[in-house]
Amino acid sequence: MGDEAWIDKSSVIPIYYQLAKLLEGQIRRGEFQPGEVLPTEMEIAARFEISRMTVRRAIAELVSAGMISTQQGRGTFVARPKLDNIVFELNNFNEEIEQRGLQQKITLVQADIIRANKLLQEKFEIVDSNAKFLYFKTVLSAEDERIACENKYVFYTKSKPILEKELKDPSLPEIIAAHSDYVPIGAKKVLQVSITTEEEAVILGVPPNTPVIVIEQTIYAPDRKPIGWGRSVYRGDRYKLTSYDGWYKKE
Image 1 (cartoon, rainbow, N blue to C red):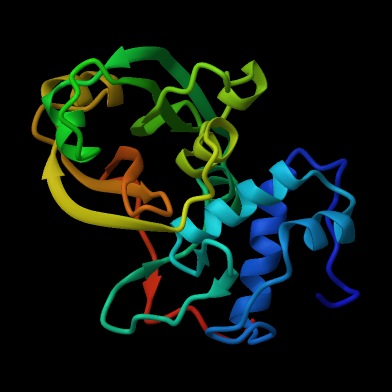
Image 2 (cartoon, rainbow, N blue to C red):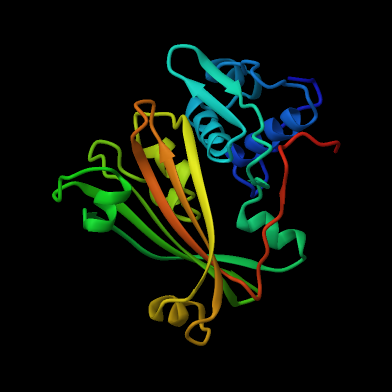
């Protein structure tokens, strides 16, 4: 990592997210090439004087974005861009709204421990109806206007409780990094156009059958089994997604 790389620990932006963006920029500028191994968690933690858990969360974000991959026992590598697929910008909701000069708000509507239903059994590829999951529902707003709602699920691990401060913006990779013994090795995102369900229309304060953008995200463990799943619904009239072929571009 270059000497110019730094993290503002006094910023309101989470340290793990700053690190993810820093690494993302280095990958895009070609400082790390496809197939090249990244520094270890310990090396990155020592370089920035941060915890290894924080590094794990940053790595989880980049894995989720498809920019890096992890191989158990070998390390973390820069993934090769798949030019036949759409790759979305690694901007979280906070940053996206702040770039537009708007005031953003993330409201945690529900946080609960639930048992597997048929949908979760399908998404997590399990048959055990007694399996337990951490469930989070959040509403994303800009200037007091509701823009999106999100539902996220991860396997419940009794020995690894989620701290209250981690519930302010519970991104799926961050929840997994904090609540799992695994570092995610891969992720799949599926985007589709749909219309609001009755519940979604009420939550977003829009008429029934309003067009929405739906993104389903699945996070995978080293054994290739799903360990996290989420469904995000964005108002089609108030939100847009930016994509590009690959992720290598000039800053």
